[in-house]
Image (cartoon, rainbow, N blue to C red):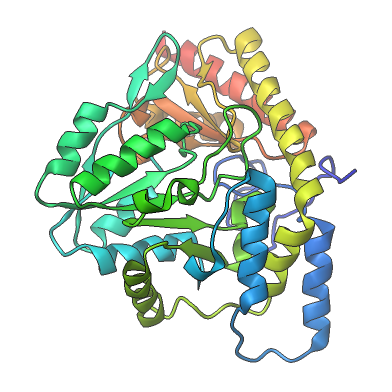
Length: 391
């Protein structure tokens, strides 16, 4: 049994998440409040104790560890020859945008979606073109409008699409059929598809996650897939990601971008930490997913009983929950700021994710149960105070 109950003090540790006021409880950024698996810590300690910290690069055992992980965890085969090392998924996305599209091109996304996608597009002189996900306010489920998606991909200026699989922030796990249809549309319109699959390991129910690289090889010749242990094992500071590109010419192009942007040189702990995660982290992940599943149900039950004005969007992926606040406001910027000011609870406002996000809040539930309970009490207090002042 691993420890998912201890409160780890993180203030004054250079933590981005915990750089908050003393009375505040941060439940916003995708950073878990659990210690990394002891097997990872042991591997990193051994590396530090070696005592020489020169230039390094990953070797075949690194990429084989990635391949074996996906085979064992997801029954999906990834050829190690398709893999490139990169210092992170976000840098990889920005680098790929520069390599496979041109200034002024459209890059298609599906809002509401991870806000950093927008930065990677706009900061490189490209245009965001969103095929917004369709939201059913009765079932609180999102779906793809494939007719709209095809129209956006068919635009002559659309040269790239960034997919989130599973989808952050709505927690949607795309089915094999949906992924196949997306890939076929991208191929039909000569659009390079980049799939960010950083949350793929964190699916705690059915349907399971389907890695894009597990689709038939002939379908994915125009695809780039980014994976990383960072969200799975809470090791973002390792700066390690793997970019999987089945097509050799496209892979060489992406690799030139990684090299030009100096994104291929790992830090001291990236290689041993990642290898330990992918070779020894199976049981830790299994227990983590049970904890996340339990916490998600706690959130659902608490909102139903104590904050009925909020609807939790059904999800079985990631530890980031998407809260429909449309019965309260259509401007969660104000709501998020009010809750933080009145209760100290720091969650994410949904507007930064685009689409209909202005009606939502995002909350991170990857924390010990006592911390989650504190956060939910603060959320309840904040919502009720907000409603009172609105009367």
